[in-house]
Length: 144
Image 1 (tube, rainbow, N blue to C red):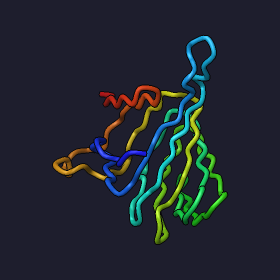
Image 2: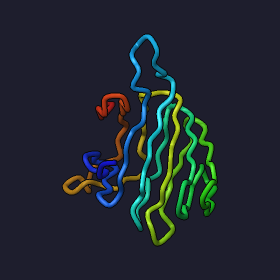
Image 3: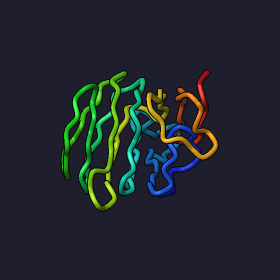
């Protein structure tokens, strides 16, 4: 897993993340599923955002404050949060050790519309953006 840096809207250098996709070839590859693994640093949070697809987050270890729409709950290991496409959601580490999560998506390309930010240095005055992540290639592209 790599430090979560490079996204001007979600800069979390104390958080580590990685993408898992089927490495098979075009004749035998699953392109309809992708997984993001994160170790969210103490005090870090995934800011409020939406996706164009459904998502399921499993808490693997630690304690999270999970927001889904207007509802917020504290959840621990083995909790699963199902997030319908277009629903604002956020996850914050509420514990004293890294929060281990796994997010599953029904695609390898995810659009994300940020509603809040963890601004990267030098971007503090910027407005939240909409972007596309290609989890197969690691490419990040703003959508205008």
